[in-house]
Image 1 (cartoon, one colour):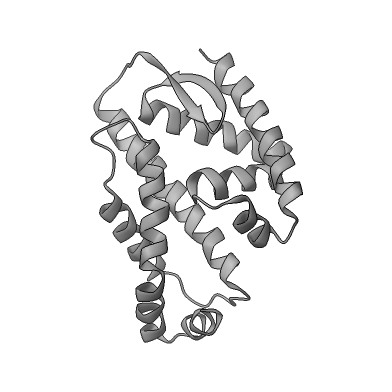
Image 2: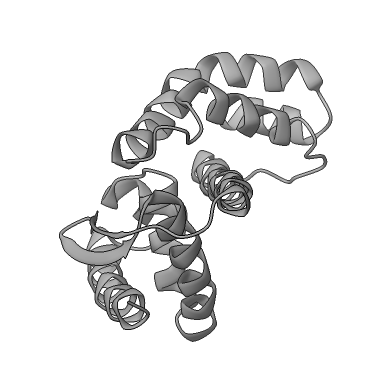
Length: 182
């Protein structure tokens, strides 16, 4: 996989196609996991989300890929942007929703329906990144990227224990932040 990433980074377009074939099941798993947590029926379908990630990937040029975890970090960022952009578009079409309880792992967070949660989470995550950038990256990788503790630790080149502590801290901070607005 790292060899394909490096070939693609060096400009070999066929490497991206081979890489996509290799990673498609993993991308679908990540997208499906996120979609499973969504409550909104009109949000992006798994295939549409994966296709949008692929379209954005083919626009990327000249990355010096060092390892596969770097790639999954990029995937998490792309999914976050795609999902937030789609939520913004839907929110522009409809205004106002009731509150529901949304499970951010084990923390129960009162928030608007799925689009409102996604937008509120994105905004809170931007603020959190200014205070605690590593912990915000953990949220992005785990929540938006669907990575496990171990995979997140690999991407961030830290220990699973550090990731676990960062995740717990982030959940507390985000729960407080998201609850304060409601």
